[in-house]
Every structure is written in structure tokens, then in C-alpha cells.
Amino acid sequence: FFLLTKTSLLLNQPILSHKSSLFTGASLILFNSFLKAEKEVFVNKKKKMRPSFQCFLLALGASVYSSHSLSLVAPAVKTFLPPDVKNDYGVTEIACQEAASRMSQLEVPVSNSISESGKVNISYIHWPAEKTGPSKKQTLPLLLVHGFDSSCLEFRRLGPELSKLGVDVYAVDLLGWGFSSMEGVTDFSADAKMEALRNFWTTLKPDSEVCIGGASLGGASAIEFASSSSDTDSSSLAKACVLLDAQGFTDGIGPPSLLPPFLARLGVRVLKSEQLRESANQMSYFDKEQYATEDALKIGRIHCLWHPGNQWEDAQLSFIKSGGFYPSKKIKDVNQKTLLLWGRQDNILSGEQYVPQFMETLPDPTLKWIEECGHVPHLEQPSETAKIIQEFLEQDDLLSVESDANGVLNAVEDNKNLGVGIAATATTAAAVGIASYLLN
Image (cartoon, rainbow, N blue to C red; front, side, top):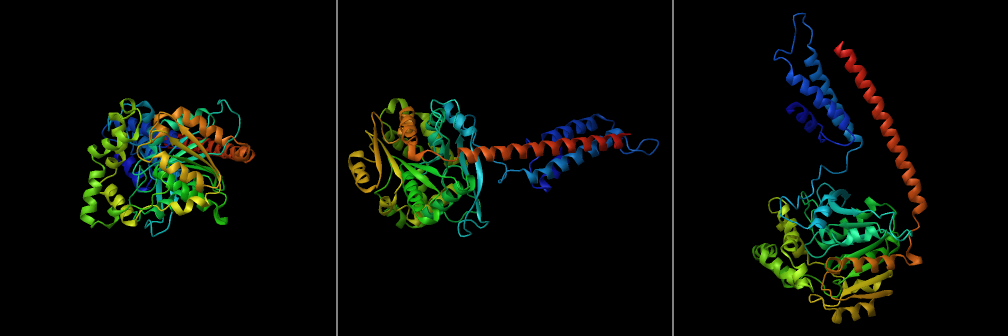
């Protein structure tokens, strides 16, 4: 096992992959037969290799081949293990457990000023549109951005509801928050977050239009994304926008950006404390008894504790020092149809104060209030929120025009998979032939 592992590490590839499970399985079976053989495995009385040692060599060769073959099909990032929210963090909410199990990472190109390697690994969750949903219309995919120092787990309830209604949903972690990789990243400013967000979508879905959505501070990101998509250089990105209790008319970080580093670090450490998170938890919901639970507190802190060393703290300091987002002057440039959703009892961003400003400034807004709801309608009223978003996306001028193109792409993908299967079958036959030759 050591030799198999070492070989895999030398090739900088994981031993196990769905593409190499056949060869790896054969390797382990054959290696097991080697372990059961007699201790003297090198030569017999006729100076020929014992079959057990031949099995070992074949196992090692199969492992080398299977690991090396991964270079053609391996994902763009090193093996990513989503957080085990149940066993490591004590989360009992099934929706969170299921959402975390779906989490993936995508390697995204960025400027060298953001990452020394010119790339970052961005985490996200995908809930594919269910074909059995009540509507047969092909809506735009929805890209959702979480709030301040949160994660894609924030959409653990809304994502499945939208999926059931036939909407293709992606919830993404902003650079420096959530579970996106921080190793080698030197800039976590608002500009860096936006560059990574735009490049995430163009890497994941090249030339595909999208509805960008954001909650709270994620709304500021959505505003930036949509306003830049109004430019001629990136007009193919956002075709619509959804804002959920969005931060739009509050610019910057304020006084914390002026703190000396040691005081700022102390403040960041307080930010992840249970006391502060519990306070925010209580402020976020209308029905505190049902939703401001211990699980909600745990889920809100997982990403703070998940990153090794001081990575999370350093990322927050970088963002604070940068000054934060400045969306207020860009709201007028969001020319896309925009759905403005607001919890009627939001005690963090008052709808009475901010909704009229949005309605006056956005070029093409639609307002929907969510009753008996605080700052997070996607968590407190996910079913109603999902239905409103679905109805918004099903407007005739927002329907996706990609169904034909998707059919062609699926056919190409099927043919590619067929080619991989044929190649694997041929290689297996060759391996069996080599084994027969060696063992005779």
C-alpha cells in the first residue's frame, strides 16, 4: 500500500478516481494476493519469479497506469473534501448535510496580483433543475452569492426548492469567505472577490447568460456583477438580477478599515466568536424560536474554523484594509430586469428605508415583500421565496435560449464518454493480455 501511495504521490494524482477505479481495484486485489504469499517471493528453485511477486509487479504497474491516466480526466483542482458538517461540527439539519455533500471546487484564473499562481479554487454548490418540475420552461441558470463572511451553505434551503421548480441553481463562495481555497492568495479585496466571481462563471459556463442573485452584502456583489455586465465588454454575463434584502446604499467598511493591524485582528477574532454570531443570529430572523437555533449558529461559523492556521483571519484583514464594496453609485447601471425581495420584518436592513431608494434608482425593478420574515427570506421563507423567483425567471423575455445548444453539448459529452469507455475497455484487454503473458 505504501508503494502504491508513493507512486500516486510522485505523479501528483489521487489513487482513487471513478475513471481509474477498475485499475486501482485490480491493483489492490493483486497486491492482496502478494501479501498472502510466502515470504520468499523473489526466486524459486528454478530462478524464476514467483507468481505472487509477478502479481505485485502487475499491481504496481496498474497503479502507475491508473494514476498517470488521471492526467487526462482529473478535475481542475486537487482533491477537495467538503466539510463534514454532521460529524465534525455537530450540525443536525438535514438540508445543511445534503448541501455540504454537494459542495465542489472549481479552478478559476485570476490576476497574479490576487494569487501568485494566477488561479484560485472557488467552492460552490449546484442544485440541477429537476426535469419533473411543474414548469417545462427553460429558465436562466441562477447564480447566488451569500452575505458578509458567510458561505454557500446559506442557500441550503432555497437551492433545493428552486431545483424542484425547474431552476438550475449555483451557490458560490466569494473569495476569502466560505470554503474557497485561500492558499497562495494575497488579495481578498472587493475587486479581487469580483474578479474571481466573474471568472468563476465564465470558467464554469463559458458564453452562458445568467441571472445573478445576492443576499445582504451578496447583493452588493450582485449589483457589481450586473452593472459590469451592462458594459459592452461583458454583456453576455447577467441577463437578470435578484436582490434579497440587499446592501446597496451603504458603502465601504467604515472605521474598522482605519484600525491598526493588531486591533483589526482582535476585531476579526471577535467576529467569529459564538457571542457575536449568536447576536447576529437573533437579529436575522422574525421567528427566532424556530430559526435562530444552535444549528444556525454552528453553520454560520463552520467556514471560520475550517481553514487552517490564520488563513481566515488574514483574508478578513485583507478585505477590511481594502475598504469593502461601494455599490451605491452602480445601482443605476443595473439595466437588467431586477427582482427586489425584502423581508417585511428585516431589522438589519430596514425595508422602509432602503426599498424606496432601490425602487427609485433601479431602471427596471419588480418588488415583492415576504411577510413574517426577517433579513434572510431564503432561510426563513424558502418555499415562498423560490416560487417568486421562479415566476420572475419565467417571464418570456428572460427565458433561456440555450436548450438547443445544450442538446448539442450533451451529445458531444455522450460521445466523449463513449470514447473514454472504449479506451478503458481496450486498455483493460491489453492489461489482461500482459498479465497472462507474465504469469505463464
